[in-house]
Length: 292
Image (tube, rainbow, N blue to C red; front, side, top):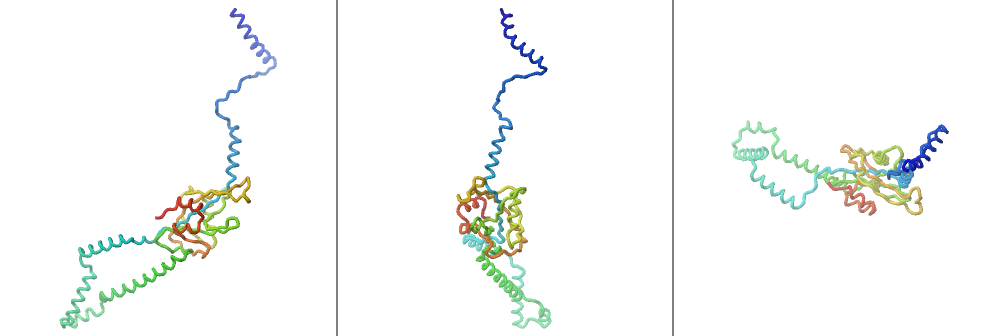
């Protein structure tokens, strides 16, 4: 009985193999089994959709050029009081300097001269020597020159286009950029071009500024921030809905002496940015700009 049943089940298989041998081909019949891992051909539509979504944004590279402080910050009232106290303690516990000893010697010599204790030889020996009082007078003249230069620095602080303003603060460069039909104060930016990195775009944005040859050092190849916005509805299209601006930090070189055009650039402190940047743009800039 078992042999008869096995013969019944094997008979269709034997006929199938006989047909394959007669035709001279070997056919393979199998059921496709899905293991839950899509093939690479199945991923092509998704990749194409992602690429089309990424191309809907126009890319820009912008540079955040900073001028680091040149002078130390002005002391606070508490720091001034503490400095005066430390100076007074040092003065009370210190020894006389060479200049102070020289002043005492000259005072004693002048007193002896009044009493006619000095001889003619001693007068001739000290005739061509510069006294300590003469040195103090020359130092006073040098101090006046320094004060004059400080007055010029105070005048530069009011000139927003001068890179020499606010020498004790950290300054950032803003440039007047044409966006659509408006002229806005922004960080220098340029649209990305195929074949270049975003950092190269930011470097090109700095080099393309008219009338200025800035020497700067870029800090890395990774953006420090990004600002995304959509175009107005009247100019928005399905292929381009908005723009993404990637910011790169750079430091102005110390040996920079280029003069910028007045009205085209501004060097501002962080607290002054709110007067010129739009709130949404300023919010993204404040995330990576810090006072030093």
